[in-house]
Length: 72
Image (cartoon, rainbow, N blue to C red):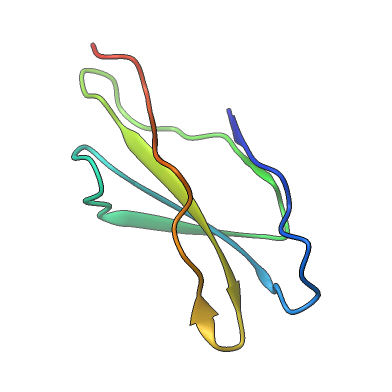
């Protein structure tokens, strides 16, 4: 499970989890609304890379630091 601290900004409308099999190359994005955790169902055999962004009416904010699953 991936979890993060909420952004302390009233304009935040939710969060997106970005992930893929190459560092900083995220081909999948999951809108999780106001949730501050995410359980992935990614396939084994790969190292997966994750980052989170908050969004508001103006769009997505900066990506968080990246987290990677252990190497297969």
